[in-house]
Every structure is written in C-alpha cells, then in structure tokens.
Image 1 (cartoon, rainbow, N blue to C red):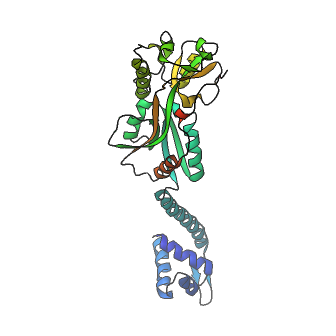
Image 2 (image 1 turned 30 degrees about the vertical axis):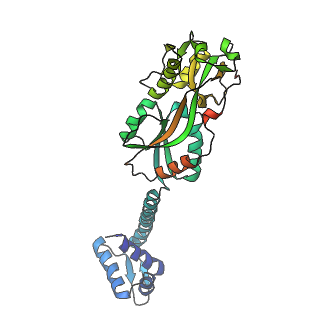
Image 3 (image 1 turned 60 degrees about the horizontal axis):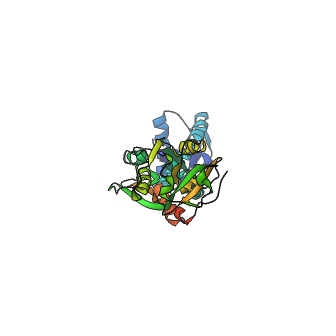
Length: 305
C-alpha cells in the first residue's frame, strides 16, 4: 500500500462515483476500479458497497477515510517542510557567541534573522572565545560570533564590526574624571582581565597595549566572563580594559573612559566551510548587509553612575 492508493480511495469517498473519481485523478475507470479492489484486498476489509446506481462507504471505509485524510495531510506537511528546509526557510540554526557580543551585536542580528526567517528555530549558545572554534569544528555550532583570530582553512569568516578597547573604573576613581587615558596612567593600577586560555585575542590586545609603552601590566583577578569583570570593577577590586561594545548601557558604579590609541578588535561571524545547513545563508546575508558604525568610531567618554 502507498499514498497513491489512499488518494484514490479519498477521491472515491468524496465523489461516491467510480467514473467521477477516476476523472478527477485523470484516469480511466477500469484501472481506477482495480486500484480500489487491490486496496481492499491488501487491507482484508470491504471499504465500499457497490451497486449499479450507488456507492456507499462501509463503517470500515468511514474510518479509513478519516485516517487517510490525516495521513495525507501529514505527508503534505512533510513534503512542504522538506522543501522549506532545503530553501533555508525552516529548520534550526545553532548560533554561538562570546559574551562580548551579547550586549548589542547578537540581539540586533537575531532580531533581524527572526523577522526574515520566522520558522527557523534559533538556538543560542553563549560560550567563551576559546571554545567557539572547537565547537564549530566539532559540529556543535552552525555559526558563531567571535573575535577574528588566526586563519583556519576549515572556517570562513564574515566581518561584523571593528570594536576597540576602553577602560572601565569604579565611580569616584581618580581616572573617572579624565577624558582619555594613556598607558602610563595605568602603570600602578591592578587590572582585571580574562585569562589567555579563555579569550586569547582579547588578552593579547590588552597585553600588547601595555607592552608598546614598555609597561608590565599588573593582573590581579582573571575571571572567565566579561560580566564578572564589570562587577568586580564596580566592587572597587581593580580596573579593566574591555571591548567598548559592552559599554553601550549604563552600569551602576562603573565609569567607562576612552583610551588614547586604543587597540582594535575585529568581530566576525565564523562558519564551517563544509556546513550544509541552508539556514546559515540568510544569517550571512544579514551580517554582510548590516549597516552599523564600527565601535571604534564611537568615543566612550561620558560618566555612567
């Protein structure tokens, strides 16, 4: 038995006439009648009662009609869904991102994607930059927003923004009233930063900022998450150099300040080269078409208390 036989029976049940049912399916009556007879033989039950003038459904036929309609409807849904998934209109997209992107970049991109592809389920996974490459190559993620790092032949990247480092200090700190900061202003400050094992690109940018000035930075605390770093600064346990994009919103007891010759950080969308998920293509288009000033172009100078 296959779906065609169900369609034949539904046509007969809806017309209660072999000739009209056959015509609906662009068939002649004899082969159509044989198909119904074959169906009854395979099922081992009588579905219709035939007479020279009337065709009526048996009780078994009534039940088979309801079930056939349900099966055919699900079959049509399955065919439609398969086409939509192949076209990138439906399915699932697993998007990873570092916490630095959670403040502004990810909400904007995901909001745009949801409007463009409402039937695609977006699974968000916040993780550390060091984990993102591993998860992409391991098939756990379809795409990820992270810092641009060393080129990797199995990954392709699309630029998102150019971010830059800024300084955050506790409110009332001596540097809170300065419009801009140079490395020597931080020579005696205790710093809070994620370790290189967690955010290697970010840690390299911070270390390089001091190295160019001939200063050895004094790292006191090394939490993994950027949110924790901000809270530790608010608790007056040190100062931190962080991506300016996370300073878009006011944080109580934390004041951002611009750095002179601030190091820049390129943020990219990273995607496995061999991925066959059609849901990725619309995401790439959104990122490429996205119009936003680079974070490095927006000075961070105002106090946020």
